[in-house]
Every structure is written in structure tokens, then in C-alpha cells.
Image 1 (tube, rainbow, N blue to C red):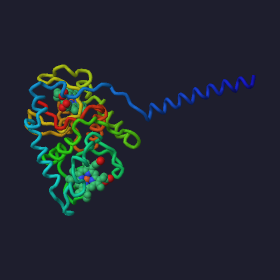
Image 2 (cartoon, protein in one colour):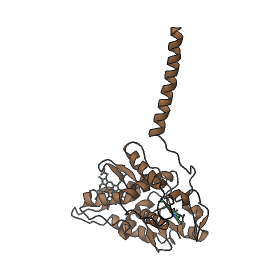
Image 3 (tube, rainbow, N blue to C red):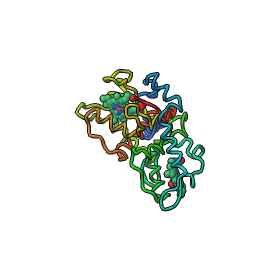
Image 4 (tube, helix red, strand yellow):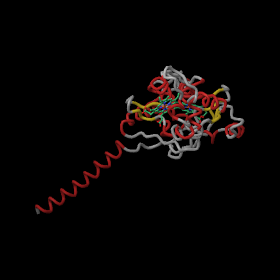
Length: 268
Ligand code: HEC
Ligand code: HEC
């Protein structure tokens, strides 16, 4: 009797332990993607736009690439160094970097975007002033860096200390905002493939950034695009380069996980 009782308890114990393990795996483990099979914005672009994107000689973003390439080996700041002084050939040292950014920076104790990482090197390793987010020279550098990862799958690490930043980005994504009281997913999950006035709504994937925007005739950074989206719902957009958009950008990279980096994409 007693033995049976114990055996029953042991069985229950194992089941409970199993539940605890499952709960742990859920809490710290993989969150679920609303769109498990993401599609790049290129699926929603017109053939005319794609023709420009797919031809490096036609794609105007390559003017930014060339500018970034020149800046790469141009010494600046009090240390008299260029990026190349420390990182050598970008085609080797920067390959894959864009695909895994934003990333947790242990020294800063937070997630940083590629833009911020460039500015950290400028300030701390070159003694040069940071570049303004979405300015031409910074977009030129990140477009040049992004190109070194073209075709590689987006793969960010949201585990461990990065997770709280991811969770905040996810919250931002799912919060209704603006006079129109819409979430990001109201357009990019519930209505992709449909028209919003002249625009064909995509899934709002970030794998093509920085991107050449035909309407603006310039390369734009992801956070500039995000400001546009928040303005579209008549909301108050947080500043580019700030914590909220950085966490959102981190969440967006995870949403786009597995899509190839397409920097520099072309959009209308
Ligand atoms: C004095 C040397 C030095 C210079 C100059 C320098 N960096 Fe860095 N950079 C580093 C070091 C060291 C790291 C490693 C990250 C760390 O601090 O832990 C790094 C990291 C990076 C990373 C992140 C790479 C990764 O794998 O996560 C990028 C991107 C980067 N640098 C870009 C640049 C750019 C662009 C410039 C020029 C504007 C530049 N760096 C100038 C030393 C330098
Ligand atoms: C009112 C509808 C609407 C809402 C809400 C909205 N967007 Fe957008 N978004 C657009 C339109 C229109 C475009 C341009 C066409 C396209 O790619 O969908 C766009 C483009 C984008 C792109 C660029 C896609 C590409 O391939 O170039 C990203 C990334 C994006 N949105 C993210 C977001 C995020 C994050 C939010 C929430 C903060 C958001 N959007 C909210 C309408 C919206």
C-alpha cells in the first residue's frame, strides 16, 4: 500500500517536473512568430522597382556604397585611424555582421544597432564625433557594411541578456497607437497584400535596409521608415537612435529571421 502510494507520488512528481521543464522552455525559449514564413518586401514590389534593385549598375544606392567604401579607409579623429586600420578588408571582417545586428553589447549592457556600433567605434576607437542617425555619411557606411552580408540569412540572438530588450520591442510592435489606434500588425500582418491608398502593403520586413526610396530619391535607414509608419497612424514617433526604436528594430530582425539580407533594396 505504502509502496504503491509512493510510486504514485513519484509518477506525479515526474509529471510535475515535466510541466515545470515545459514552462521553463516556454518562458525563456522561443516566442512564436505571427508570420512563421516571412516574405521579403521584394515580393510586394513592382517589376520596375525590382529591375532597379537587381542591377547594381542601375541601383542608385550604390552611390552610397561607394561613399561608404571611401570612408572605410579614410582616417578621421584624434587617433588618426580609419576603420580599415583595425578591421582590414571589410569584405572579410564585416561579412555576416549586418545579418546578426542589432546585437547585445556586453560593455554597454544593452542591444545596439549597426548604426550605433559604427558610432561607438568612431567615438571610442577613433576619437571622432558620432554621425547623426539617418544622415548621409552614416547611411553610406551602413549600406556599405550591409552589402558585405548580402544574401546571408538574418539571424539575431535574442537569448540571455538580450531577451528583455527583445520583449520591449515586441511590446512596442503590438501596442495600438496614434489617432488611428493601430498596431504595426494591423497593416503588416492583418492586411499585407492589400492596398493602402497607392501603397501595396508588405509584411513590414526589415531585411532590405538601408533601402533606396524612389519617392525620396535617397537611401533611408530603417528607423526613418519606422517614423514614417508611426506618423501614418497619426502617432507620436519616438526619436531615431533612441531606446524604443532600437528595441523595435531588434524585434523586427527576429521577425525577419531567415530572410536573406537584401541591402541595398529599392522601394517606391
Ligand atoms: C582602433 C581600432 C578600431 C577602429 C579604428 C574601428 N574599430 Fe570597429 N571595432 C574595434 C573592436 C576592437 C571591435 C570589437 C568589439 C568590441 O569592442 O568588443 C570593433 C567592432 C566593430 C563592429 C562590430 C563587429 C561585430 O562583429 O559585431 C563594427 C560593425 C565595427 N567595429 C565597425 C567599425 C567602423 C565602421 C569603423 C570606422 C568608422 C571602425 N569600426 C573603426 C576596433 C576598431
Ligand atoms: C497604416 C498602415 C501601417 C502601419 C500601422 C504600419 N505601417 Fe509599416 N508600412 C506601411 C506602408 C504603406 C509601407 C510601405 C509599403 C510596404 O512595404 O508595406 C510600410 C513599410 C514598412 C517597412 C518597410 C518594408 C520594406 O520592405 O521596405 C517596415 C519595416 C515597416 N513598415 C514596419 C512597421 C512597423 C514596425 C510598424 C509599427 C510601428 C508599422 N510598420 C506600422 C504602412 C503601415
